[in-house]
Amino acid sequence: MYDMHYDLLTILYCVFNKKINLKLKDIKKIYDNNIIGGIVNLYFMSKQEMKEQLNIEYFDVTKMFKESIEYLEILKQNNVISKDINFIYSIEGCDYLKDILELEHLYKLGLRSILPIWNEENKFGSGIRSDKGLTELGKELIKKAIDLNMIIDVSHANEKTFDDILDIIEKEKYSNIIASHSNVKYLCDNKRNLSDEQLIRLKKLGGYIGLVGYVNFVSLDNENMNYREKQENFIKHLKYLIDVIKFPINKIFISSDDMSWNNKFYNKDVFNIFKIKEELFKLIEKNYSKEIANLILIENPEKLIERVK
Image 1 (cartoon, rainbow, N blue to C red):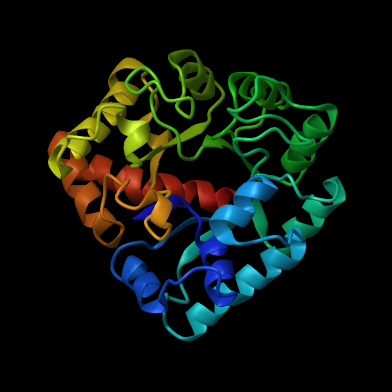
Image 2 (image 1 turned 90 degrees about the vertical axis):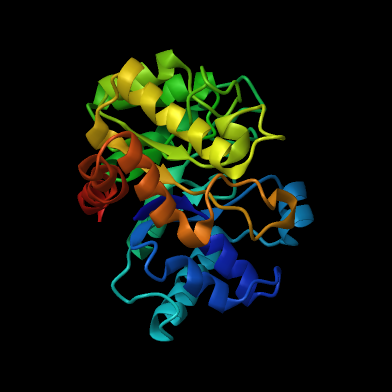
């Protein structure tokens, strides 16, 4: 399967710089006969959260991006992951970009997707911890990303920023727009999930959505759920998208956003990251068909990736 939002670049930066204790054999286990590609991400939070959670106080985005890609190449050369794996690179939270010209430079280095904001407010716009929208600089950033044919990811955007981004997308008649790791707000009233109105607008503009198996985005009442019950709640989000919103099946994919490497988020995933392909195929096939499982887990994300490579 393709995992369309996984923080592998941040994980590798932290592993190779001894910020976290994760073995390369565990990364190998994630990808062996499990994940064949997707969007791998370098993410940025507030300076305080970067320090507290990752022990990072250094924010040269270009240098960190280049280093992370080099570490990924080391993994390929040492057969930790396949040389043929179909990745594109993303940055989540553009807080520390020096200017919009740096985005163009990063594109030349291989960047193909951006989340302009994380949860915080930054110079480009606001996430779910603020009610402001895109700034004028943020509007320029979105237009530059469109010029570069990059994927623009609205996960983490608040409602105002979401609307501001989609206003530009609509005006420019652009369709490489995704919510890579967001679920259905009607089923789980989490600020990170999308309302029916947002989902319908994303659908009308030809955008994509990636459902995510993080328990707090699946159900707010998950403390006493067992593993099977959590997965049953997850599939409700897919059914709602298809049956209620009428979201095109060929515009749906899955993201793990797996955080099990971070002790703060341990045991918060609906799926076992080491078996996520097997578990998802069985779940979607059981509720729909093998063909739809293949479409959502392989064909849809593969086509999107090829559009921006």
